[in-house]
Image (cartoon, rainbow, N blue to C red; front, side, top):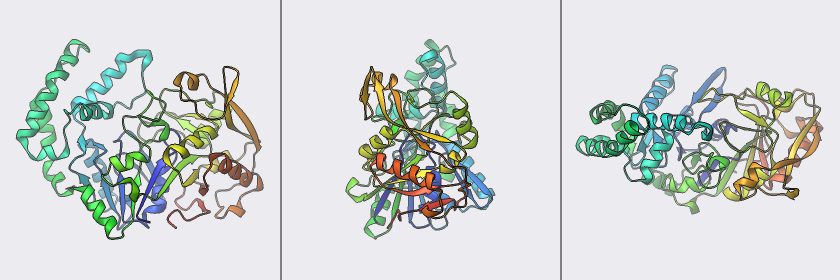
Length: 428
C-alpha cells in the first residue's frame, strides 16, 4: 500500500485525528498537506488527551516521520508552542520535517484576517481569525513568504516590505488601523530560524524516495470535503483543497501513487461557522448531540452546530474524493435515542433532489427528506466486533453504508484510543 489519503467527508471535526492515529503505527510517514492551525485533532492515548492544531497526528506515534508539506501554511509561534508542549509531556518531536516551500503566516496576515471578518458584519464567513485565508491569498497573488525565505534575511526583508506596501494602505485607509512596520515582522520571523533549520527539507523528494523504497505514506487532510475551496459550500469554506486531490498538489506526490482514499464521517453531522447546513437542529435533539458528543471546537472552543446524518453529502464526498473506505465515528453518541432520522434527499422548491445541488442558492433552501431508523439503549462503548453491536445499531450502520456507496470499514464506538470496531483492514 504505497500511499493512503485520509480526509473528512462532512464539514470537519469528524474524528480524523483518531483515524490517523489508528493507522499511524503501521505507516512510515504522516503528511499534513493543507490548511494550518485553523483545525484541531484530538487524540486520546490511555488517560492522556492531546489536542493538535498544526502538527500532523502521526507525531504521537513512535517511529513515524511527521511531515508538514508545501500545501500547508505555518504559524511559527503556534508550531513551536505545540512542539514545546509535546516535549514537556515526553513526546519525541525530533523527526518532524517541514517543506521549504510551505508558506508562513505572519502577524499582518492574522491582523487582516480579524479586521476583515469584523468589517463583513452580517456577511461574516466564520473564519478562525488565525490568518489562514490571507496567507493563501498572498500565495496565489505571489507575494507570500515561504519557509525557505527565512534563511536569507535580504530576500525576507524585500518580500515583507513588498507585501506591506499594499497592506498598510488597506489597514490605514479602509480599516482605520495602525500600519505594521517591516522591521517588527522580519525580527519576529528571524527569531525562529535556528530552531527551524534542522526540520526543513525538500519534503516532496523525501516522500517520493520513501515510496520508491516501499514505505507507506499517509496523507492527512485538514478540514473536510464540504469546506474545500472548490468543492465545498463556497464561500463558507476554508482557503485550501481539503479533498483527496489536494494531497497531490499539497505534497508533490503524484495522484497515481495514492491507492486508497479513506473518508471519515460522524454518525450524525456538525459544522462550525456560517453557511448552509440542511439537517441542522435547533431543538433538544441538537443539544443532545452537542452535549453527548462534546461538540465544541478543538481549536476555537466554539459550540458546533449539530444535525442528523446527511446521506447526499456522504455520496458527494464519495464521488469527489474517490472514497474506497468510510470510517464512521461517534456511533456511541446516538445511544439512548428512540428514533434516529437520516437525511436521504432534499426537497427544493417542491421537488425531490437526491444529490447535493450544484447551485448554492438551492442548497441554502434545501429541506431534508428524512427516513427514520430505530434507536438503541445498550452501551456500545465496549463493542469490538460488529456482532457486539445491538441489532438496531447494526442496521443503522448498514443503511448508512448502502446510502454512502462505499464500505464502512471502521466504526468508532467511544473516545478511547481502542474504542473502534474494524470491519475491514484500512491498509490491507
